[in-house]
Length: 101
Image 1: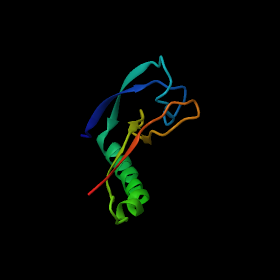
Image 2: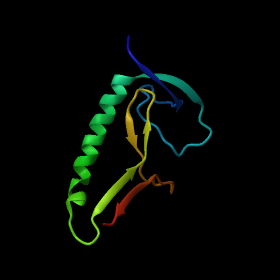
Image 3: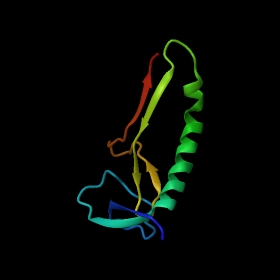
């Protein structure tokens, strides 16, 4: 028996459910069951790539090395991981980098 996690997600026009915009208002919401294994694999791959991207910044030595990075993400109705970035409409997601000793 597979384990599932329940998520409330916006209902999108995209038939695959892979594109989401956290900046649209008045979206319908649906409850979806996402297989835990799919979510684990997608999250594992996304975090590995993100670690690779931030590795150089974290390895920098000096008076204020990178200590922490906080990244916002959404989970799609299919279990996909979507990092939130800036849009051309002026709405923005957040990436917080903490420097210090």
